[in-house]
Structures are given as structure tokens and as C-alpha cells.
Image (cartoon, rainbow, N blue to C red):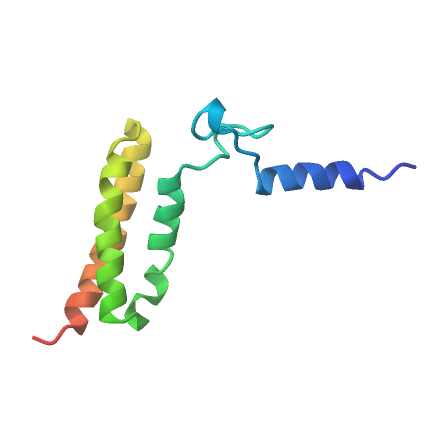
Length: 109
């Protein structure tokens, strides 16, 4: 019985590390559906909103940085199609509001 190991490895590697072709346009990848090739703003969104569970442990400087990153990310999401825009803008606003609340509670009055 043949083992499909090399082929499975090839497929897994292709999903994890899609080959990008600049001439094919942004987000184009070899063998991977367009939905799996994330735009840069999604990676930034994940990076920014991934710290909400530890927001109380972040320093004031870190909180200010996250808030400014949220503000810079907003126009990029606003350029997306309607359903994506609605979902991600609401989530981004919730992340930003949480960081702002924690910042306000930490700053001396």
C-alpha cells in the first residue's frame, strides 16, 4: 500500500505558505483559493485585536500604540465590500473602545 505522505505534505505546505506571484495581482497565489489568501489589513486586524484579553496588563504606551493602530486600520477596512466592512468595523471599534477604556482607567487624573 502506497503512503500519500509526500502529497499530503505538499498540500499542507501550500496552504500554510502560498506562493505569491506579483505579476498575477495582489492576493493571487498558486493553488490556493483567493479566500485563503488574506489581505494585509486582516493580519494587522488580528494582531491588534488579539491583545484584548490581556488589555489590563498592558502599559499606557502599549495601549496608546494599539489605539493608534486601530485608527490607522479603520480606513483600510472601510474600503472593503459592505458585509466585510460592517463586521470588521464593528469588531475593530469594540477592540478600540476596550483599549481606550483601559487607558482611561490607568491614566492619572
